[in-house]
Image (cartoon, rainbow, N blue to C red; front, side, top):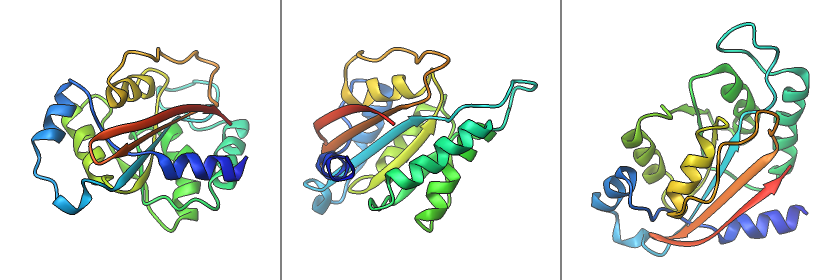
Length: 179
């Protein structure tokens, strides 16, 4: 499973859609040397959250175990960039794997398309992991692949892992795995 996942991750690369985010990315001047580089974008929903006694709950014990499972899943796969929304549940999901890679998770605003475009550009030629929410991650994947293929995740679905790969600006492949 690990070698298959590593192979899948090694194949993927960056953006081709008709949204504001795509236009922002396509209008940026890119270094000519990275047109053939492979970019891999891994997108996940945050892990299971604790009982919602607030608008910003932490992870439950099961959620913390899932966050640690990500560390094990990707232990042999170097990841250059980590992004999280400003909520506890996404930050707590991604922080263990970021630390395992000697990195810090950067915060993004899931409702700011320009911010997302800049985040994707920063990952050009790299492997990056983005944590979001049941209603933002499928939307982001749809934007990246240029299709309306994925819908909002079910409230109890925390185990989807979306992998999108580009070579330069060309979409090579995308996959959905369960972990």
